[in-house]
Image 1 (cartoon, rainbow, N blue to C red):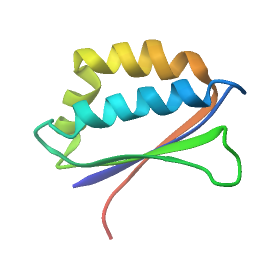
Image 2: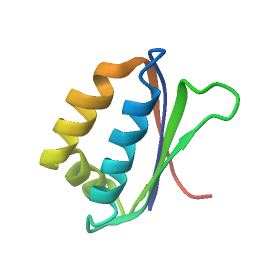
Image 3: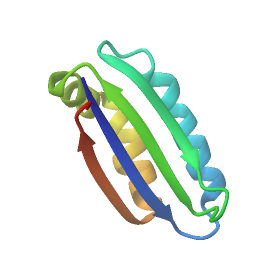
Image 4: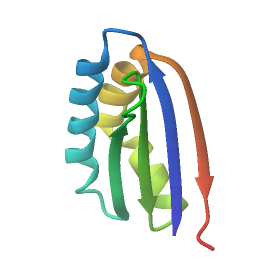
Length: 94
């Protein structure tokens, strides 16, 4: 099992669009085989900061997620256009 944490900051004024895109991704991704958790969060201290908490069975499930047609639509061409900065990190269970 692996965990992916994606933290990002969006341009001011794009928070509503970001939340909509994140909810859409959560709906799609929750149905993927190999996905155990996929939850989006927004900071209570800075409304422009968000993160995804993602858990997959293995690297193959993560690759399948990134290859899904909706990933390009909602992440690459959606969220990606709103981001000022982002950071991704993969974790293994302890």
